[in-house]
Amino acid sequence: MSALPPCPQCSSTLTYEDGTGQYVCPECAHEWPVAGDAPAETARVWRDASGNVLQDGDTVVVIKDLKLKGGGGVVKQGTKVKNIRLVDGDHDIDCKIDGFGQMGLKTEFVRKA
Image (cartoon, rainbow, N blue to C red; front, side, top):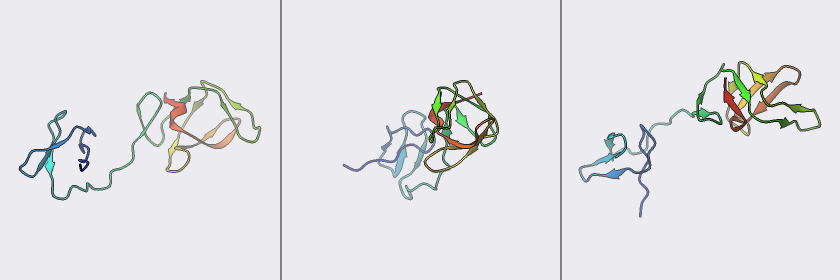
């Protein structure tokens, strides 16, 4: 059984082929051709712990105490981080936190302010 591609509009995995050369999404009713079913590279979307979309320059709040490697202390819950930069890699956010300096955070530990 071959896996059908998810809907490019709503990312639903319930897509099906209607027999006329079209894929159909039953959730949003989007249709797209079977030929060329390799969609163009889509930009990665970063989401915070609450599911809100994050963008470069946003302000976020840390949602739990984070111990720093190397015995550098703890970033406390509720710490506000301004002007974030989203990156690919082992951490999703590059930022500068007052009192700690430059560091990387994961999006699962922040929420949009």
